[in-house]
Length: 289
Image: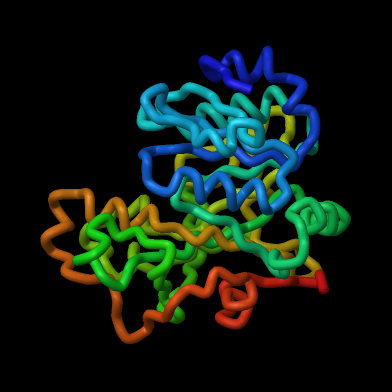
């Protein structure tokens, strides 16, 4: 279906918002649109909705598998506005997911299990949301791929990730089961990245709830949604492998000429397998086997 604006999706599109999991993909430019959408269709989302400018075409091969919303993804608070509107339009406890083009969801055993299976297990563990890490991907050859993006030559950092306590702004005391995570290109080239955009944690999978609000820092106004696990044991985590930081660093005039290459001694080729992320400790299976 094609919706001419966000309100049309939340009203006329109500039937497709009745059951999840639903993927909301924000298309910021023309880079790897088809591969992003096709990857998430293959994950098993019941609905995949692409928010994209009127000027960008939706690949014809996906027109029957992906719903399109004409939307300015570059407007202020574009992601927050759309995600919160969809939250309000869905029945409570509907699983939603959001990401951007050139980003790809991986979760434990995603080679053989669909996203709905994972979220059913996560629901049984009484978890309303799932922590994901945005793992930066980048090309090893900026000469051939000057925008930093190449699926056939994707690299990632195998080390250099760390976490710091997330504190209450009033008294600077640590929040229960919440951490800020860092690493990847945002850490290695932090001088070119605003401080508020250096975190790599994102609550990309969550259940809808009355009054729930996504905030601009990828956290929610309900604090339990922002926790990495329940109090009694470790839970599942997922990863979004993403070329978005590489694209930004090479498109920004203030950084592009300062970065001759992204690779370093802790780079390794990305194999496009969840098992590699498990082996590197970048995602956690929890109690799911």
